[in-house]
Image (cartoon, rainbow, N blue to C red; front, top):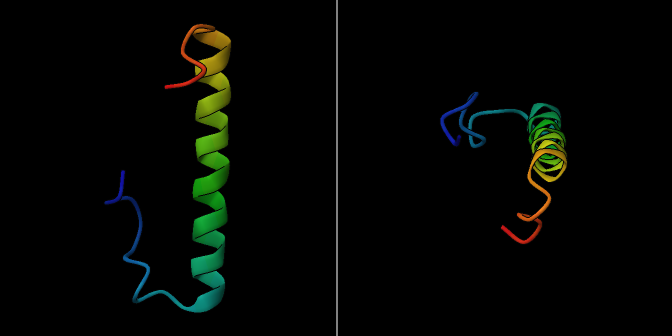
Length: 44
């Protein structure tokens, strides 16, 4: 998933902050979906 978007070195600071927060939000959504669909995989 690292190929998504632009490389962080070439992105200005506000865009880098938005990119990082968006990735964190996406990971939280994916984790919540995984937890809701697979109750036994809380530690993976």
